[in-house]
Image (cartoon, rainbow, N blue to C red):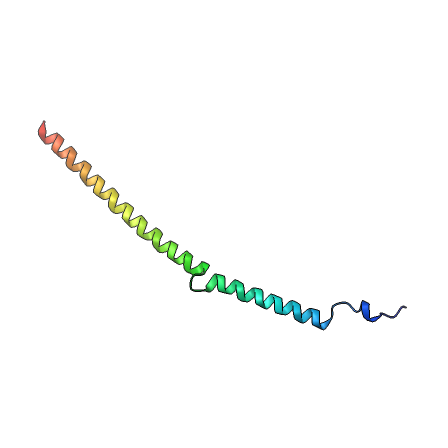
Amino acid sequence: MRRKTKEENGITLIALVVTIVVLLILVGITLTYVMGDNGIVKQAQDAKVRHEISKYQEAIDLTRKEVQLNEEHFRYCNIR
């Protein structure tokens, strides 16, 4: 059997530590984008609130139009 030389030892401790540090930095950046003050989660919550407001505003507008149409229909029927 052949003995391994220094160049054939595989992953060194320094390479492993550097890899772990890089991964920790990437995790930190990702968490900032996801959970930060203006992160993805906050933007999704804001979008949900805007959607709910828009939905209720549309229901109010449709009700107003329906009332207007009913009033016009009533006037039209009373004119005849």
